[in-house]
Length: 389
Ligand code: PLP
Picture 1 (spheres, helix red, strand yellow):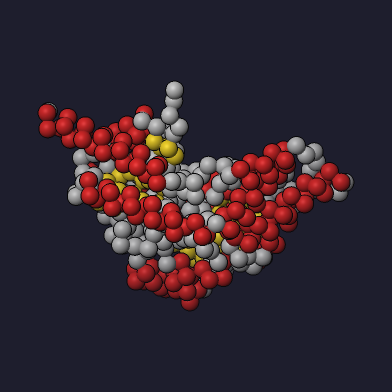
Picture 2 (picture 1 turned 90 degrees about the vertical axis):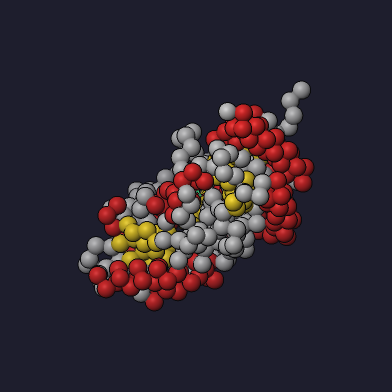
């Protein structure tokens, strides 16, 4: 008999919500292109527009300013384009925090040479003084050039919440355009486009219990997007060409509505996460919890015990039925040292021991107990093996 698994990797992908599954399946059963004027087309269109309203409501935006994409990565690459950076004449530049998702770090459509990284503190939070200096420097070098700043709302590895509103105020004072990747923050903290002060915001359906392969770029105003990524067809008001993935979008809408209604669940998740961290520290006094002094998402912990290699721990936990991540999710199936921890100045040997445990709305105390039981046993085994060697 196989024991049910304990899933503690919600930041990599949240389980599909029942409401999202039902909405997506219902949409899959429909015929019709949402651009067609006949009844079938109009029914598909209605599902997309309903979803647009729910996604807009999640971040306090106008539904007309929501552009559906194939996910967070596409939303980020759509935002990061020289033409979206304003300015005139000179070559536009991008300032991105050093802890961004790889899809932002790569610079989107900016040439690599035009992308500069903004340092973070040892707590994994954008260093505002150094950021202010960098923006001023950039402005002094190219007073008329477009400048785009991209800072995530919360980090996927450590959960550290970034000072986006302060970043935006500084950026704006220098005439820069602001993009915020809210992929991990959505559903885990209240979000308000205007309060953040961002011109563009990225979202991803599968991080809030929607289907994989859907996301959105949300604009503060229709003029914010000057250069769409996919051009051709007239879909999404000519801002993203290609027939819409109606089923995924319908699922995204259902997930967004649930996520908005669920903010009450966050304190319970935070208590479970805090209890987990307290138990880890009680068991391993040398454990390091990353970004612990920063404001963090309530569901995320990233920690390391010196000498307990993340790869060994993640595989051992998996074999015992518990799913967690080693530092960053390994997109190629290979665990690489985290650029986030490196930017925080974490020693590579400690970073190699970092594991991320991320909780969600269905996580219960017995999931945490099971994680702790397996993790403690693994830790003992590793220590015994080392002392025997
Ligand atoms: N941005 C952040 C902060 C993420 O954590 C992720 C996914 O891990 C993405 C963007 C990419 O989103 P998607 O998987 O929808 O392409």
